[in-house]
Length: 179
Length: 113
Image 1: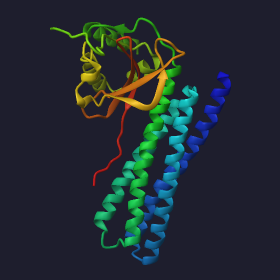
Image 2 (image 1 turned 120 degrees about the vertical axis):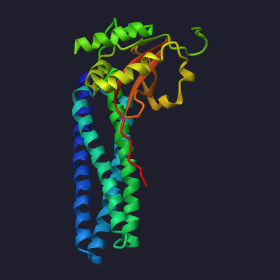
Image 3 (image 1 turned 180 degrees about the vertical axis):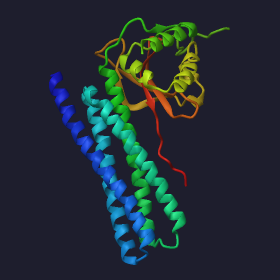
């Protein structure tokens, strides 16, 4: 049973990693396209950029729904995700940082090039802004779900309890020496 | 010091979960020092009367394995363990004790207008 749960969690994690890579590629692509719009000031480029941003935003919304669903399903199954947690959490933190970097870059682009931006592009950027925030929250939820599942399945050792601040200080000192 | 033992008083802290200890060891030492100060101050406090700055709240939609009985599911809580809100930890409250489960970075989405 444990092996089955672990196998299922493994395929979910593999899918999750693939989606991270795909979302990350789209976020970075948005950055390249922004450079084009800033340097090649043609309406056709703006139109293409708006379309691309809107498509990326829709993909981010889909990914947010998918990761929220995966968080719930793994939690319901009490899946043993321990073999995957460290690698996946590292990936989540990296993509979350890229999302925040992208949001900042987009904001600066809007400020610097507001004359270039037509209504269609503005709408697409707003859509992208809310989708990326939603995706960020879904990633954060996913990360903490994995950490909670890891805690569910991790062994517990006796002798690590304290009932006074002094005992607790001694306990944390002990952990330090165990490192 | 007089301590009221009414309500959900925190009578002890348990860090026996290996996941928590491993995550703790990976925290920067400055974060460990600050977080220790916050956790230490929880002892003898009432869970329902902790300072708001700790952002203590039960995690909705998540019940986790009890530290005392692996067949039971219990509520999991989280709180911020640094003043800048960049790190948080989770625990269960069982039989008057906080059983810490995990801790780590807590990044928030940049919503600067």
